[in-house]
Length: 99
Image (cartoon, rainbow, N blue to C red; front, side, top):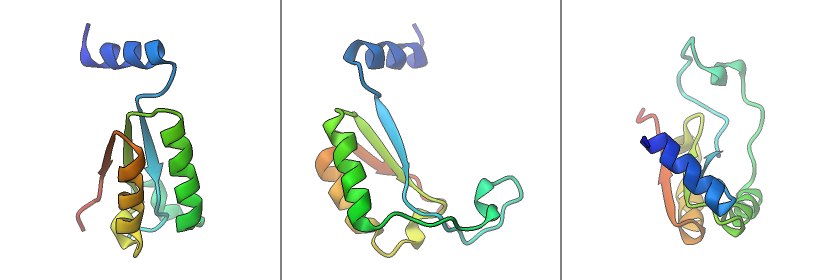
């Protein structure tokens, strides 16, 4: 059994997703030709709305939460989001572009 098969079997056995990818930013400081983000900003959830989403993810028993954007580091409240998410998920991480 490879790693992907193991994760799938664990998720099915527990009846919940192992991880969730949450896009918290709809902005980016690049215009990469291959990226959907260059199609323009469509709006972002507020901190309170994101807290509600994160609560739902935690209530569902999700093991990992990955927070990203567009470029999530362009959000002034990113650290608040990560602190809140860290309190509800077993594992929380972020995937910034590093720009």
